Figure 1 (cartoon, rainbow, N blue to C red):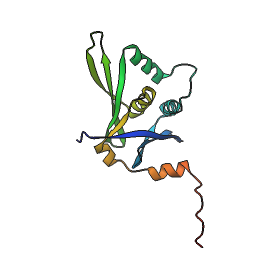
Figure 2: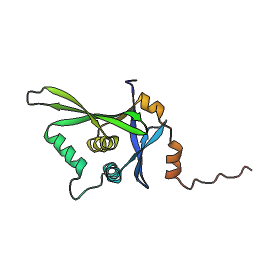
Figure 3: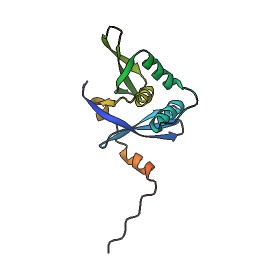
Figure 4: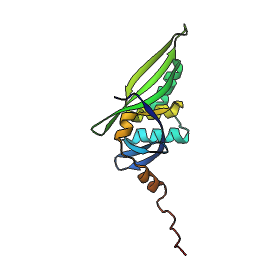
Length: 155
């Protein structure tokens, strides 16, 4: 398995029948991860910096990390098996003796993405996953601009 990673961002979060479609990618390729409604809403709220009346689950996780002196270093979407994505959250923490510890946690990509956005951490995709996913840039463009301007006839 390749250890190389590709930096990506969340390009859009759009409603679908069974939850939300999270479009992830960069200028050369975009792919879709389907997530449940609650996590999709959390991702969209973090992207738009929507204030909340009370802390939600991902807010609580962020508060716990802060209280423990831990920081999300990065998130890596690292595997795709039978249309199911897998991810890792990489944390760092310093103890009172200034000893730094790196912690790697298995997590759902949806939760990983939400926490990364909330914490301002970068999101990556392994080269293997990147090579396997289908480019959905055209779908995202058509959803963002459903009525493209008509081209003018040649004179």
